[in-house]
Image (tube, rainbow, N blue to C red; front, side, top):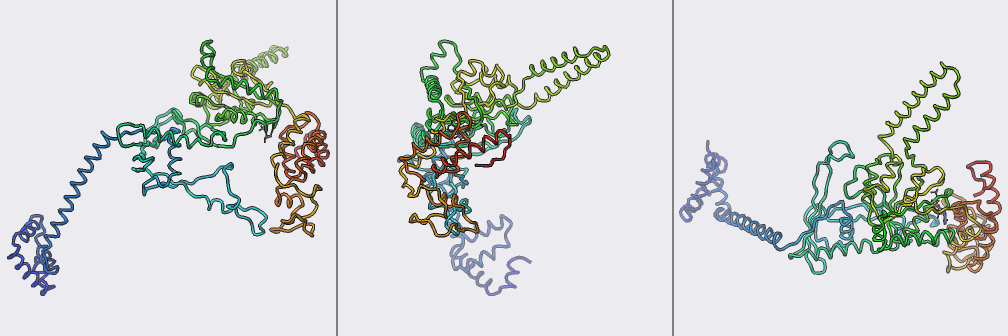
Length: 606
Ligand SMILES: Nc1ncnc2c1ncn2[C@@H]1O[C@H](COP(=O)(O)OP(=O)(O)OP(=O)(O)O)[C@@H](O)[C@H]1O
């Protein structure tokens, strides 16, 4: 049964109409109906001819014209697309300039950061959302921070919810305008095969390329745009110190081994309490070394352009603080390396040193704890012990046994040596990295240690360490400076009316103390100390009294007994109470001295 007879059975009336219409059409538009029917027959769909006629009769006009219109649209679209691709290709090839940027380069970060701050510029509907984590140092309005039900304590539970994502252009093509100029941005991601030595076996890595193009045959507008993005990125750089650390092992690449881990406000040199002479000496030395003329001077004399400092002294005496303050003074980034990092190999270390920027500070902290292997020395020490043991033994047989023990001992050292070879940094590996032939010149290396005597002579020989700075426990004068620094920042704030230590609950907004001796918030009873601390930002003395109170405090602190960190810790707990800090100093000093004598870690007075 063919389609016509089937339809006749099902819809006799309609098919009659269709046939009539078809007959009609055949007479008036004989050609198109035949063409379609011929085409249907040609493509093996002859049975659909009645359906076609039925649609024609139902619509009341010939569907061929609709098909003709659709065909015309399709053909026009094809032609337009072809023309578009032709002109697009022509313009791209002959009338546009392009600059490629690798995602491993800092320029990529500059541009993306800039784009993320220009949402209107990214004329694209394809964006990538990124979670932005704010650093502790970024400004935050007090009004954006919620409080608990009592209104007394800050509450940060909604902090994450309030953080807005940042939008950057997604992978693909984008366009935007900047300063009246059209720019096209193409973000492309591809997988590359990496048979790098770090992994030991080949892996696929994602690599991203950024192509930025502008109209016309000169790339100058793009260069200007990149310069602008970089300028914006570093606009507040003068007020900040960027801290960088080595990238995780799987991310290290030939040209980008460092990643930014912090961008904190510059540490003011005057906040570091240190002998003025010592401070000036380091500052002058570094200033001279960083001078643009210095490289020629060094080159003319065949001296490698490197400068190394050793900061030594007890814990908490300001070694790290001075390193940061120096980086701040000279506007340099700090590159911090921990030699205890388990994935760090000697090759990594060399490559880290060879990819440092032209001028920077490299900080190797607590170099004595870095566990640097000294193979030759270990062997010699083992040999010496063996020889001494041998002399002590009189018996021949005993002596024979000892020799065997010596050999065993030596074998053990050698075995340990070869085992250690695979991990950790050896002293020679470090020396090679810091001043080997391939090592970077221009950097300032700062090594800090608590026990300089334990360092290998090779590590601190002149040329590797050019200046040593000793840090000691605070003198009375330094204690006074620390006191002043702690409280003078609050200058200009309204003076607290009552200079007596607070004994009651929190003061009311009008400055009066509440009647009850304690207040209960959130189920907790507030101590006078907590309550006044959470309520007010005022000091318990006037600013004019500060120098005098600072002198009183310094008189109570014995010379060379406490580290600046200890004094700072004590004062921090009395952040708004300089008077109380003076009053309680005697008690604290006695307690800490006793604690040190008893070698206990538990503090009785804090
Ligand atoms: N000389 C100082 N002047 C000002 N602040 C200091 C000084 N020494 C220590 N501090 C304060 O004590 C804290 C610890 O200081 P820092 O980390 O610089 O000490 P460090 O000598 O590097 O200690 P460590 O040897 O344990 O690494 C910091 O908060 C710092 O502000």
